Length: 211
Image (cartoon, rainbow, N blue to C red; front, side, top):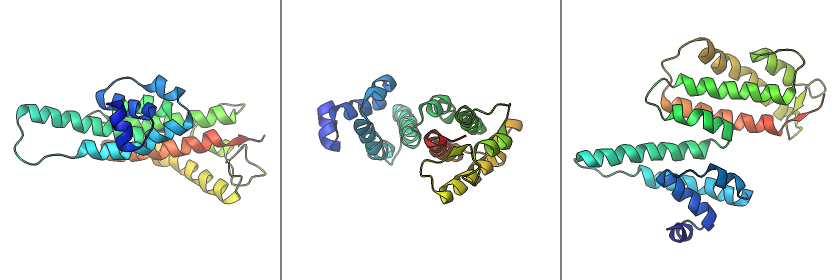
C-alpha cells in the first residue's frame, strides 16, 4: 500500500506512510517530526490531492451503513484540510479537536489567538506583564529603529504590514472571543482564521529580537 501510494503521488515512501496513517487514523506525529524538511514538504504538498479524493461523494439514496461511511469520510476530509492549513504543532494540537466539534466555533479562534499572544510574549520577553494590544505594541513597531522584534525579511514595508495585522487581530478576534461568547462563527470561519494565525505564528517565530 505504501509503495503504491508513493508511486501514484510521486513521493517518498516515508511521506506515503504518513498519508496512509492519516487516512486510517494511526498516530504519526512523532514519526513526522523526525523526517527531514524535504519529506515533510512532500506530505504537505500531497495533502490537497488526498483531500480532494476523500471528499468525492456518490449521488443516490444512501443506506444506513453508507451514511456512516459518508460521515467518517467527511471527518477524515476535515482532518486533511486542517493538517494542510495548519503546520504549527501547538496550534494544531490545541485546535484540531474543537475544529472537528459540532458547534461553538468561537473556541478554536479563542485558542488560536491565545497561542499567538503567548508566542509573541515568549519571543519578546517583556519585563512587565503585558497582554493584548499592549503586548503587540511593545513587541512590534512599524519603525525598525524602535521595534523589539523585527520580521525576518528586515523589510520596512513587511514590518509595517505585519505590525498592523497583529494589532488588528487582537480587537477583531482575540478580545471578542476572550470576553464574549460568540455564536455566529461557522466551522469554515474558524478553520480560515486558524490557518491565518498559523501564518502569523511563522512570522513571529522567524522574527529576531534586536533589543
